Image 1 (cartoon, rainbow, N blue to C red):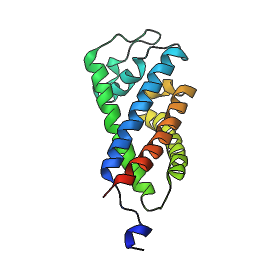
Image 2 (cartoon, rainbow, N blue to C red):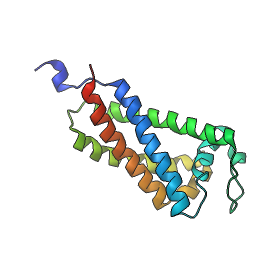
Image 3 (cartoon, rainbow, N blue to C red):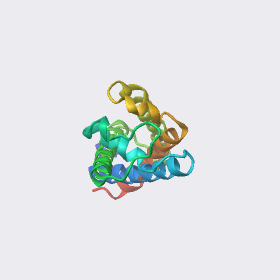
Image 4 (tube, rainbow, N blue to C red):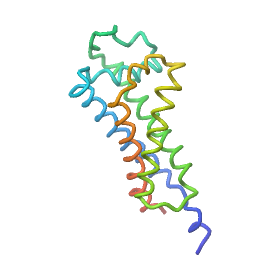
Amino acid sequence: MTHSDHHPTISWKAAIYAGLIAGLVFIVMEMVLVALVGGGSPLGPPAMISAIVLGPEVLPEQGTPPEFNMSVFLTGQIVHFVLSVILAVIFVLIVSRMALGTGALIGIGVVYGIVVYLVNFYGMTAIYPWFAMARNAITFSSHIVFGAVLGWSYGALRVGRA
């Protein structure tokens, strides 16, 4: 056994792709469920995310649906995917010292998704108070799926690492 058998090397490419894949699944799930189950606008989640950098003035008045604004929408997507990749890198740094199969990575990813939800929607509300309105089952389940997909996709993608 070589040293790398005990401490698997990190595949940064796999981490970045896993973050993008998990981020895509998350944002699609969030937007669809908000519209179909939550009775809200699918534009709500991207607007809330874009407000991190553009400020809360881009958010619609309470009770009114957001109007489509390309710069708000694109900013929300860019911020979301940058954060998804950052979260993926943190996840990979946490799990990289353990020799884990994809199943274990999915399980740890689920826990990670729950932790990210708690930090974002209970901790970060001190900075971004509008996040409190997204404390719901849709956002919670979307974070669980984000973590599971992150663990699964990193587990699958790292196999091809050099």
